[in-house]
Amino acid sequence: MYQLKNKIGILVLGLTVLISCHGLEDLNENPNQIGSDNVDPNLLMATVISGTAKNVVGLGFGDMAGVMQHTQKDGWSGGHNSYDWSNDSHSWNGYYSLLNNNKTLIEKAETDNLDFHLGVGLVMKAYLFGMITDLWGDAPYSGALRADEGVDFFDAVFDDQKDIYTGIFADLSRANTLLSKSQDAYFSIQTQQDILYAGNVAQWRKFANSLALRYYMRLSVKEPGVAAEGIRRIASNPQQYPLITDATDDANVDYVGASPNDSWPSNTEFDTSPQGAYFRIKMAATLVDALQMLEDPRLAVWANKIEIPLVEDVGSPDDTDYIDDTTGERHVSEKLVDDHLAIVGEPVNFDKEYVGLPTAITLGPAYNLKKEFNQGSYNPHVSQLNDIYKAASGPLLKSRLISAAEVHFILAEAALNGWATGSAEQYYNQGIQQSLNAWGVGDSYATYISGPAAYGDYEDIIEQKWIASWTSAAQSWFDYRRTGLPDLQTGPTAKRAALPLRFYYHIDEIDNNTANADAAINKLETTPFKGEDTTNNSAWSKMWLLQGTNQPY
Image (cartoon, rainbow, N blue to C red; front, side, top):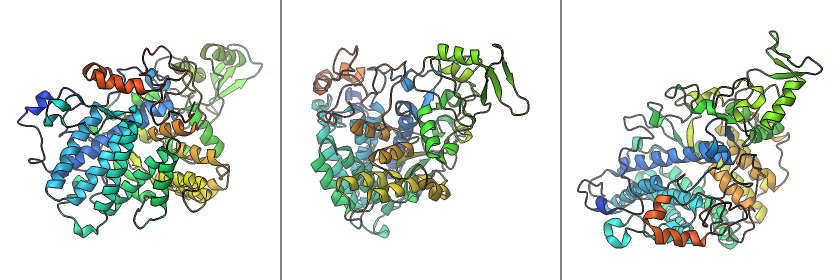
């Protein structure tokens, strides 16, 4: 992990060339277009990494955190809590913009025989195309980013999802080979521009193989033979396929905090509104309850304790409602408690330390007897995020691309399947240890693992992996689709009575690349939760990866 401290800034996309899969005619005639003959690959590398990092947090701390019930919002919450998405909700253009810069990075590296930069480019290509196909399904791949070759590529064909994963594995395998030499065998590395690993070749190699492990497990239900072969090959030969196994090697990108663009998205330094992002985002009851049951030390890192606990005064007059000056607790009557249930649809939570916001409730701003109903404002009876999430930057404010904890949980699942040597419990324990280390509470491991968090079964692996994905919840979403775990339930305002499975193909792609988009949409498989979606292009339709798996529903 490395923090960029010059004027470029970690999340500034200064070199990004806007590009989609259609409408590239003007770019083809642009004499100032960035190309491999007139750009420093080190600058492109910083741009691609920073843009990818921003997307990871945008998903994992954004709508995916709502879907996976890490957080809920009590203001402007439709997309977050209720999955109120449509074909204009999520666009992949930003991903393809980064891939276009990354293509130039790869071309420049190949021309100049820069094996390090080429290896990095292949890893980032795999990461970005992996995100696209995980989120949407079939997508432009082999014909994408080729509009400069002529009109035949203006409307890119959507490749089969299976073929995209195959290409990802090939790129990561090549990257592993390219990055296998000693550090001093590479040249032209500018450590300050590698904002992920500061030019450390060995760490990039671990990143490549860990990413491959992630995608082999992604295929474990749909293509178990492919998954078994890939995982066995990687897990059985750590010398040829080194992995991220310690949190010090996690693929993390820090926030600089110098401007709104390079600051943590819920910060209150640049967003000073009392109804800003920090005040809208609350800890989800699902996660809070799970962490409390497990006596998990990470809860205190991620959440603040409630400011004013509630106490029900049984038998008191109906208008009882006062703050005890000695204890700081708010005392309320039975009638107020009953009225709350009738109005909000959820009972009052009398926990004196941590209270999460229930999933997709009707009146989130009024939950837990909050006196005023303003959207996205401070609620003294519900846990806010920890104060660290008010900051623009900080030691724990990172975009977490992949972690040692995730690798160990993958290996734990693989061990249960007979695809990796060692015990599932051993890997499970290490996954927890590394996650605790990553969040600065590693000293709590011995106590934690001897309590309710002790290993029991497969569900424990997935639950701990879900917990460890805090701020990168998209990975838990992908695991949920594959396993049906954790067994999350929708709330009363959810758009459908099931969690969504994918993003809609965007209307711009449908309008501008109609034939290819329609072909991909027709290959999607509908589910009983299609609702009013008029075509297969639904967030509740199954992409190839899920078809025939009976998961998650």
